[in-house]
Length: 306
Length: 239
Image 1 (cartoon, rainbow over the protein chains, first blue to last red):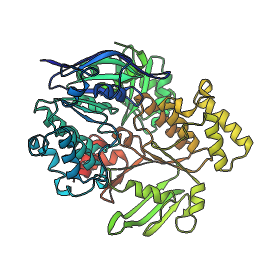
Image 2: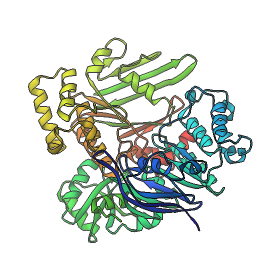
Image 3: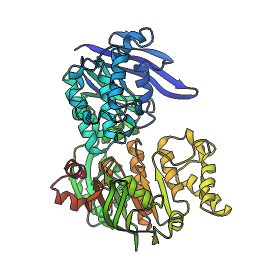
Image 4: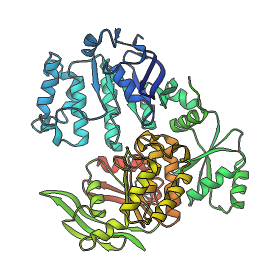
């Protein structure tokens, strides 16, 4: 495999606020790579630097063997960039937007239609509609079509699924997996931890730093604590009581179950006994596997910086 | 006591039916999850419940007040917070609290107490003089929630309150919601995080302007033979 993106010790501050510091990552050709982290982690800053729209304070970035500063003009023809905020022309129609972006890159819609066919077909019935009048899901599909129409080698998608419902998110990831088979390198950012498992490799970001880079399963495997799932009718009472247990490392709500973690293995009967002494008689317990969020929380609290 | 009563609510925009005969009730102290795909009609309903938009037809009562005749009373007796708009970025923490306290007619003394209470509760002492813009997002969202309930309303509407927040803060936020619900406050919340739907006492799922399902998370999972609300949601929304 060939390295197509090289990010080397990149720093960027806005006045006093450090947005990202010491970011280094290599991304391989045709990889689906995810930057996972909450708002303020520095994801968009990094994407703008990769997209040649922002200069780093120091460090360098090579994309498709071109430097983001020196070779920015040439590089732009090889990049497709979809910013977090919808940035197509709202008062142009679907069709006009697509033709416009094809025109800018001196190509035509018909020439690269095969690339966008699966995605664009879903919005083609509305091609005479103004982009501003499309639903959220359709806007997203149009934006992706426009980012792809010049056949980029690298596709940068900054938070394409933020604020999007669970069904549309799932459909969007299905589209990305299809695109990947065309040999395009896809770099995507998301605050949704569950989307990490859909990437080939991920970088977990927090407060401008990368906490770890690896295959999703490898990052989940990093989780070193013992984990028990606990639930009861009164979850709020339960989570507070669990935290009082001497061996408790952390107790967090995780959907239906509370994830109770400990350094040492905890005997369930003893924990059950403890909860009864605190007035909780209906606790159910089971062994559970950690997920990406467990690992992210663990890394956040350990503050491990690679 | 019921904090929300909706019977046969219809809202049309021209020929488009955004809310199609909705009927549901929310009890006091309940955490009610209001889910649906983008464009399903959730925002329309929330705007009506908050007294910002009039229904085309149907019966709606919020915090015991009638939507047609007592809209101003409703606005006084609800709290509202969204991810997009909550606090003024260029005001400090205490200025924000003072502004909202003033809008809701709290006395100077009460406002002063609230400032102390909130700063203590969120451990904001070191941030006290900072502008809200400079606060970490997580802190901001927790503060926004407290400010939204500064006038102690019986019910608070939260529109995607945790979008983009880190996983620890997201959970701390939900523990705050549990605490308030335990104290009798009604929480009406929308979210795109399906794990958060599991924290609700009951969940409604809206599809194309109608309520397609409404029950406890447990019962919904049983009914749709799914092991998570996410799967229930996908089954319903994909049709």
